[in-house]
Length: 427
Image (cartoon, rainbow, N blue to C red):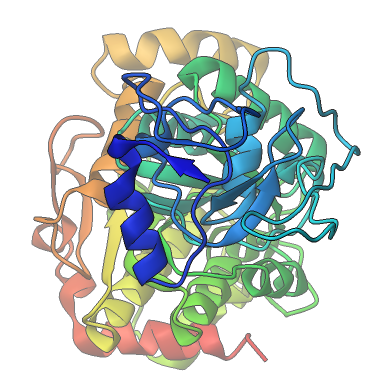
């Protein structure tokens, strides 16, 4: 193998680590050749930015040469960006492993990650992030904004619907010009689905964004097989299992972000009452989880939603105290237009609210709500365990610690009671 002067420090480092050097021409963003072999070149732009450094092998289309990468999915994304690629999904190529004369088949280029429902997620250079509910609204736009940051290497779009997930993946690739998105199939209201998705994580995530949720669909008061309302299952229970499984398995190392809501502290101008409990014991809080709190009261969907988001914020605070090495941030995106939150609302509301809410100062645009979520992931000055949302009587603008508005949020006893109540429904 002939090695250019520019490549020698890299090859030396690879050899010292026991890894094989690259068996093809690699070019930096300045298009200076790094490594060559036998006049059979394969050009990969952005090599240094990609930071390909390990011994795993993937075939470069049309060359029969192997490229060492940190994860096969990384090279597949880079390969798929080539002009006139010579491999199509389903094809495989074989060639001798770099530095050997064997003929083993190590072809992997045809296995595109978007076509798999579970993934072997391996750490790449830069940050690796998983976002639930990432096929639309705030989750999708948060993925877009994070992808535009130079320190983001991979974003997993955790979604329930495979077709919608892959459509979102294509949209995001077109919007950002980056192929950093991969699909994970996960229904957060189904604990078995969550377990399967968590098991597919092969290496630590730098960030987990728990964005999936909603009002529980057409039957928010109906119970899942775990005995919780669909509203609670979709917003909280699945996320609790996901985050705690990742932490237990050392697969979450940086920050967990939960999409909160000002509803958790009450929003009088929208006629959303503040959640109120007599003792806030685990047993009493559990009645908001299984819906029995409304057994002797008139059901109010906005209050049920407020209770759900309140319990989630309490659980996040409890996790922050239990795991000081990881930041747990609850962040409300604010009253954001352009999401699917109004999908079940009457037609006039769906049409007018996106215009009226920002004009009246009670709502903001999608990119502004998503920006809050991005800040929660990237701003190290935010304090673990804190619930950040708009100021009192506001639904947009700067965020503050909500415990200053609703002191119960800062009570370690109530936080732990909420944690105990939630775990009554996880077996």
